[in-house]
Image 1 (cartoon, rainbow, N blue to C red):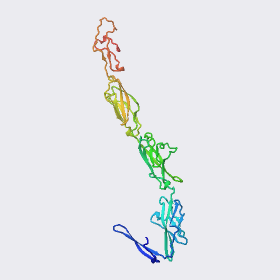
Image 2: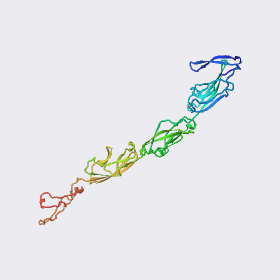
Image 3: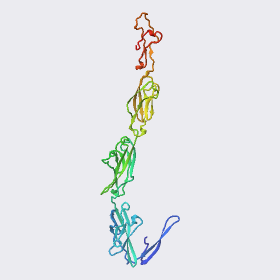
Image 4: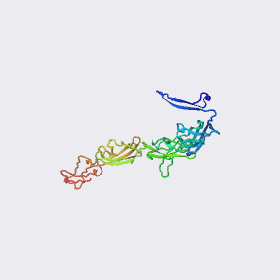
Amino acid sequence: MVTKGSFSHLKSSILSFFVKAVDGGIPMKHSLVSVYIHVLNPENLIPTFSQPQYSFTVPEDTPIGAALGSVNLVPGHAAIFSIVNGETGENNQDGVLIVEKETGVIKLDKPLDHEVIDTFHFKVSATMQQARIDSVSTVDVEVKVLDLNDNKPAFESTSYEATVMEGMPVGTRIIQVQALDPDSGANGQVTYSISPPSNMETDRSAPTFTIDSNTGWITTLKDLDYETSPSYAFGVVASDLGETVSLSSTVTVSVVVIDINDNPPNFVEDHYRGAVRESDPPGEVVAVLNTRDQDSSDINRQVSYHITGGNPRGVFALGLVQGEWKMYVKRPLDREEQDLYLLNITASDGLFVTRAVVEVTVKDTNDNRPVCEQALYTASFPEDIPTNRVILTVGATDADMGSSAAIQYSLSGPGAEDFYMDVDT
């Protein structure tokens, strides 16, 4: 509200009127306030401050009741001081600051917090009463609140969890942690570091990960191997750059390593041996095969077995029985046809392949009759031949082996009692 002309003809009078505030809504709404203006005589004194404005600076840990400074009138003026509180916190709405009415000393009535309000702007009025008429002057006051390092950096999360596949290259970004510090300047600047493991810890995270001190990005320092360490847990420290003392907070970061198929299956033995009788029926188990896979997840350890050589007639087969891969007889065997098999076995987990050999010996059974070398033997000799003279040798063979191939001879039929045959020769 400003003047538009001279008030000399209105001295010692009171002007009263209304001020109307109108909004732009539909329908339009308004409100009124009464205004009274006392026009003083020229000889009346008006309080005059010694400065056009005042500015004070105080630390935020200033105790309640402390004097921050004072506003003063020019010599010869005396008045009653009061603070004109505004409608916001910065305008001292909450009465954080007060003024002594007789002295003009500004004091702290409530705690300061730089992070809530860093600067107060308000007015102090000086009221002087003359002839029952109040004359009032105001002055602008600024109070700057200096920041102290009274806040720790606060992480955005109480803990962090991340997953990463094993085998990723060194330098892979894992996760970013962030902490905020409401302090100002260096007191609010945050740097990050990985806390070293204590002597009691066996965790090898320290040489495994590194963190960007400015951005909080955590990256790998070496290859991760699920089979060596499926997970890691370590602490990250957020520290401010406090000028007098540095404050810090710690958060736990958990990293889970995801298993991939990076290990081949390996047979427990490179060379298996088995034996079976040629008379054993189909289904007879010849050998049990086993592989080991260093991968940890079940899907990466699923292995299938195949016969890839040495089984031309398909007399053997492989099958998964109660969690074990077994080689069994599929078709009838004949030792006399083949008594030794060298079977090539391949095991695959879908990506890697490994090989082994199964040596199968077919054992003999007595499944062949002796066969004479001739169907008919004839011999001539004089009737007076002495006894115990050799007149004929009969020969026979047996395809079996061992005791099953041992042949004994004997005579039968009419006249057999007149001759003798050696049972072995």
